[in-house]
Length: 565
Image (cartoon, rainbow, N blue to C red; front, side, top):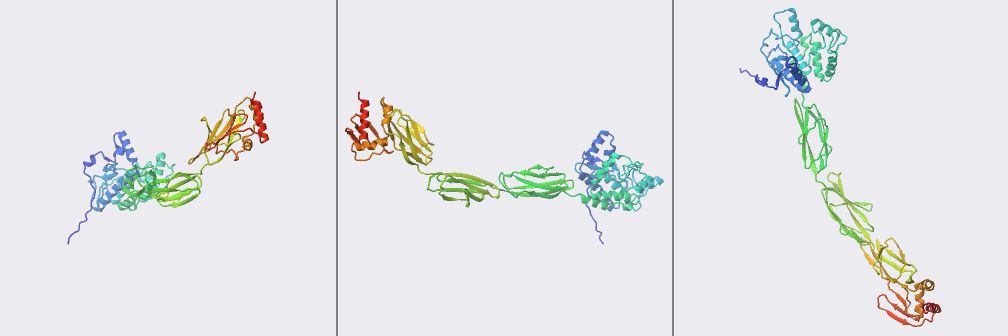
């Protein structure tokens, strides 16, 4: 019958490897001859994360579990018999010559406070041969685990840890409790610190120490076995747990920011590829320019955990074109709006209190009745971001010059002349005279001035779309030294001309209007009258004595009496 071999792979270290700077004898933290070096090494070790030191404790337990599987009793565990690698969180057990593989070993190694109570009891009794078993090793392993987590023995707060003192302590208290007034109590400040740190340990570790000290001190079978220690510590040796790694949106517009959020437990380092270390944060803002996969990696001494999240980058909306074919139109006319939009979920048009949804490109005929703002709004593919653009279509009516008159068409020099007009739809009105003077009268309906010589006036009108000008308006000035009295004698033009027409037997009623330039000249006292049509088409010279009507003759006679010597 063939014998089946069970082969198990284990990790071992060569002696020369342990001489490197990475590996340090654990005893150096407590007994290094150079006090400054000892203090520095001890500080470095106990400032390592609890997980780092817990992993070393796991290596210690694993080593003894493997020895136990071979029925090997170590019987010599103390700080000089293992090395630690603080950088990688590893532990290496050495020195096996003190152990034994048999059913009745009788060796215990070196005396010290790591020895099991039953060995100490045998030493007190003076026995020449000390009996050991697996239970004596489980006590030493529990003490070793405690030293890896704390810089002292679990019963450091007792002045004496002898048989009688321990019996008295366990009779009155349950580890780690004690009355600080007890005669066997010491190190109050360190004790308070210790109790607070114990509370921070996982429950499994606390129970392991509790069972080992309170029950296992007198009853070795109550101590945790290697397998139990392996399960207790192993259950705590979990890789980081990434509870969540999300973003506030799975899509983002190109150039816009997005939040990455995460919740991770039991990590010593954490980073996001391409971003770097994110310890101390639970979110970060990123601005991807292309579709990106972000990978979060969390590590501790037990391993690493990774998780990815993909962010899809959407193109920005773009309004390629939005215009009106004409920006200024005549009232009653129409024009076309034209638009072209890319990368939009929705396109809307807003104008004059109205709105409508458009295709991403097209044209629309419009016929506004007033100046109107047209705004196109494109909603991006993320359904949130919007861009907009606006055009204004201005509406103008044609200019209407309804009238352009003067209160006098001939006047003596001292009398002011007032020009009046009625004009619609003009934004600018300029009054120009025959000598080139231009006056802005845009917001007026009349203009008054004293003139000393004949003048001709014209209105130039415009708005943003149209230009119009009035006909010329001519005003004649009578020049003589009796102008003040003549002013009282000479009636206004619209009173005089109809009677003159009758007096000279004209065949038409001459009514001054803005369509003509009219000049009336008294050339002789016999009333040589010249009437010139402004276009020059009609020119009549009349030389008759004014005899009728009477009012005209009296005016002429009066003028004659002033003029003749």
